[in-house]
Image (tube, rainbow, N blue to C red; front, top):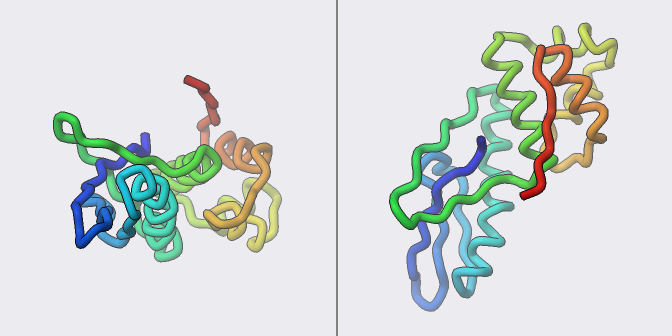
Length: 138
């Protein structure tokens, strides 16, 4: 769902990482493997700008043949899924807090991609939005 195509460009002995769909996410690595590891953090940071600004998340485009994709870690994907459901339904944070019986700081932490929210909290938020969290190990 949040698999974003990544562009890897050799750059003076390093590998530059950019995302066409998330231009705020830029990083580099000493080689392709390191660049792809750094790309996860850059993507999470880039997507957090959209959440902080209460803007819709960018839609991931279809990767070109052979193009690699990067996704946020599982916990961040779950948070982003809840955030996306909330924005698609036009629900404000205050309304989500009311539905959950939470205080606003709890909702703010839920959407802070650097905060290690509990999975039960994310599931509760998804449920009040008519969604559910599924975890798959492949």
